[in-house]
Image (cartoon, helix red, strand yellow):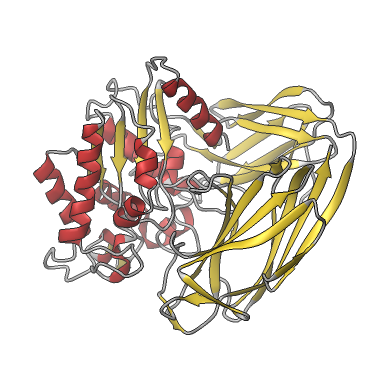
Length: 521
């Protein structure tokens, strides 16, 4: 996506002494609010879709990160990095609770769990007070509901009261409301609003249309879009921007623009494109699957489409969807020049044009190399690309795998930012383009692989993930990328493992890593 590019432009403006007239809204929170790399997952956070509904003169910067709680987001230094970007007049939306609940209402040893009426409240107050000291406005956001039904209604646990439904001892939403009163901070009751939406869809259609199939916490593109629209409509009444200026597009597309960047001639790059027919959908009026709408997608010259990575490439596609559809957009440069292209998206009642930019790059010569790393111990490969295991955090390494330092895996549905294995890839004397990273793993473990250039790993890109594998499964997962390393430049690659079930003294192993790259001139 173009979010990192957008952020760089924003920072250049902010620190150049120029005055920006656009209001900026920063989002901090967990996976339900985060941006995702569309190529590697069906999950979408509502923060990713939020920018599609706010007024056009508002800039949205989504800092939310999967697996973080109010405590770990602060203690990992992520909040400090966000504060460097906040300027007077900005707004900060603060949504935490999902991962604060990890230790059943206690301050967990993994650095995420918080007690709702003590630690959780204290961290929320930190965000509020420190935001105000920067001249910005903090707004608390109740967490979206989990899809835990009791009959046709969501349970108290689904609404973040993880204790006795009759009291608020372990009720995170009640604790947040208390902080709002104590600090006189505005609060968006997104828990109640998303409960209304999910219950309107019901137990079956909420799963079909709003949530991913893997769990009952993370939203699909449509669920994320509906929840984002709900936030925008509430903010529209809170004097954050000019009232009545929320956008209500008939067609929702994500991303809303493409920039493939610099692509070598002879290579093909691709990007997943989300599209939803939003015509006639409101946050509380379900549009059920029986009402099928046709969406036509037409590519201009230079771009091809496919319904998935195994289907033939075509110039146009028709999809039927009320839940949202994924389309793959392919680009192969024809010249070493910049190109401007577009997609046209049409329904019976509306159409939009999606701009596409890319730049071709000529190669005088390329040399393909491979780096095999058996058992993550001794990499074997060309001297133009070296690799080392440079960090193991929250895990104990042994010849046959890794396990937590205390030997215990809790049942989780997302990464822990303090538990990972880090590899460092370093280019030799020539420019190296990383094409593919494949990893062979074993066991009923999920993981997410991310990469970054900075040592703080704050701004990183997800290369791929494995969600909810079968017990005992051996999996070979291959992740394509187009990261280019300059001579002597290093790329950090982290693997964040987690267990979907409680387990003791069980090891997560990735026995082989195969890295394919081109040395280019």
